[in-house]
Image: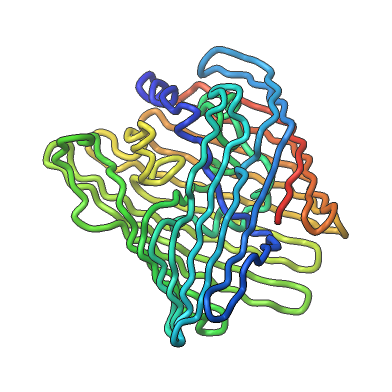
Length: 393
């Protein structure tokens, strides 16, 4: 357990800073320029702040403590700009978004991080869309975008440096799905076909998953990472149904440390009927890690992908139910992720949340989160109360 525990201590707050996702709630973007002969430009923004109190019983470090914070939730704060223009029948678009941490005074005085999670252009034709640039990837994308607590708080613990960290809480990253870490890509998205299906296939900048890494490495990725997602959406009287399946494949080749082949499948469905919603999703694979997929190697977690000459199995699932009555939405959620190393890692997260829509731009959140992370036979249990506000434009 010692090597894996040491790896967890290397996950500094900045390693996790500003992990963010575009909210699935419809932001009322503000059009700041609209000229058919030039372009259309709109701006959107999101702000959130939570008061949180976390109580930790930690057998991994041996330190129990209670900690209050005022910080952002699962989503960071951001400002984004979207561009579009029709040129000879082709819609040319683009997006840039800048993600900001607000809780920098605890560990990085006045060093507010500004990160770019999206910076891409799109070309829309009759036969589909081509995206070139940096965006969230496809594997586990719908798992997280359909998460009922996306604009809430979610799991934190000291083992991963999330309670005192400068970055976000982790939602259900590591307790139900891996994060579709934004990176450079060339992605094709089909038009809708077959009464509600859409397909996305991406060539993704690969991650080095070998211990044969760094300057002068002999390891190589001779092919890009391939990710894809097939989604299905249909509406019916007083309801909607979404289903999806995704995949990931990439290989790091090394004569020194052995080849690491990453393969994964993600899947799930969500149904909304009246005020009720049910969401179930999951993933499984080899050498896809615990938190960020193949990007886990950048966090010093290569041992959670490749061990003793073999790829490590990972799996996770998330089940949720919600009920919306008027301006109030109530959510119950449970997620789990397991990594089958010799000293296994496992994380569970349970959330009870209340979202109150104050008006079209403002949502108030009250949440109770229970998180357990275990490394071998040692565990850390964290109970968190989170009270916050989310303001979208």
